[in-house]
Amino acid sequence: MASTFTSCGAASDRDLARKGQQSDRYTAAVGQLGSDTLETRLGGIYALEQLGTESTTYYLPAYEVIAAYVRSRFTLTSVGCDSRRPQSPPPAPQTPLDFDLFTAVEVLGRRGADESYVPDLSGICLSYAPLINATMRRINLARANLVSVDLTGANLTRVELSYAEMTSANLANTDLTWSNLHGANLAGAKMANAGLRGAQLTMAWLFSVDLTDADLTNADLTGANLDGANLTGANLTGADLSHANLTTATRVDRVQWPRDFTPPR
Image 1 (cartoon, rainbow, N blue to C red):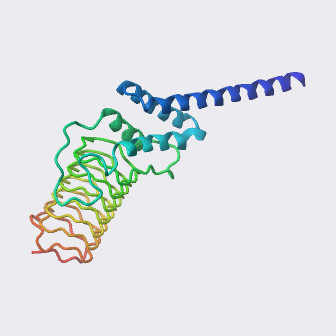
Image 2 (cartoon, one colour):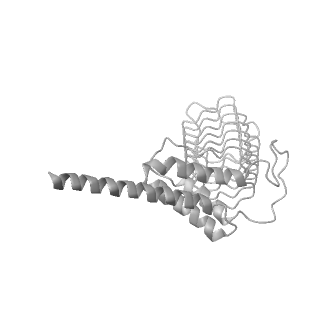
Image 3 (cartoon, rainbow, N blue to C red):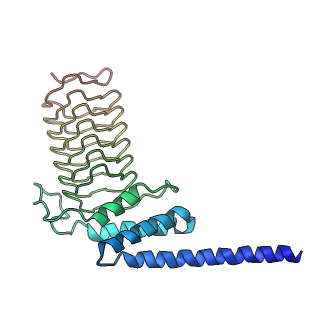
């Protein structure tokens, strides 16, 4: 009997020690994010990711801190961005996206475990950012400024992009399956071979968008403006084109139209 109590006591001590270590690691990692050294900031981001991966207790706090770190650096009041929807692309920034910010966005996008948690990056400014092949699934980017961002080959599945400003963005080969782009401004965007299966594009501005060979199967394009869009080879099987403006869509060769839909001449 005595050995049983001893064993239970030892297990309890180990659990307390482990929790204490996790608390210390969390505090240290948060502190690293304020460093002037890139390597130290990166260490803090990776430390928070590791802690969030191994601890259900620290999963939400770890990723919330990372999201707050990104928001603090890339709000719509940042240099070169404005809270209003710009009428023309702002000037390109003089410096590229800091590597630690790219890493932080990637860490948020590849998180596992609790799929109900959606990091809130709404309203951030990532215009002109080089995010090629980035993983940014299930992130809230509503009303974000993504003017001329390069998201070639990125994973943006189930991302919230309603009313985002995405003029001239490069979304070629980007996976936007089941993402919400309601009211987004995608004028002049490059979206060749983009995956848009089941995407919400209601009331989206798709003026002069290149949708060559894009997969829009079962996408909702109700009320979307596709003036001047290039739809060559696009798959629109099962898509909802109710009240969509296709009157001046160009290059509609090889398009797979929805059943019973009368395509523009």
